[in-house]
Image (tube, rainbow, N blue to C red; front, side, top):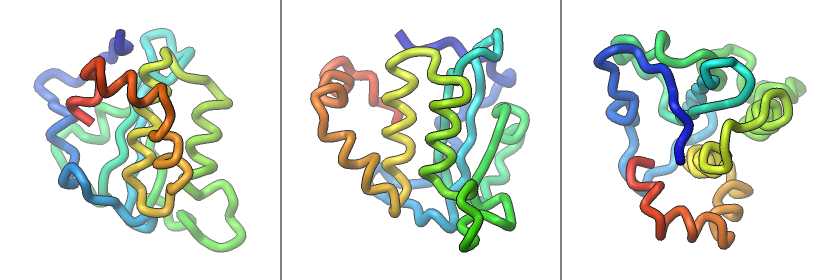
Length: 139
């Protein structure tokens, strides 16, 4: 069962995604957004989209953001400003509210052109179970 996320009234975050189903976003143009569960103890939702994304209420819906919205993003020598580091920090700092959220995070990071590691993870049996259960319909 997907984690419950407190949403801004009237905000449809799925419509905020700007890529076609099979498009990859270059890391230099990516915006990574996340929110936590109601107790702020675990990651409850994640979105990878293209920056800039100026949808109304977009920034208010998510607790944290990273990516091209920062001037140090992908800057040589700044190891904390990469997709791999953001994924690692999210996983290690608070963890995921459920297995479904963790797998959604992998799906979202697989949308980043340079994140071949995430696309390789999608070939696992766990991802096939998600597809069969219909849990990736909106991703």
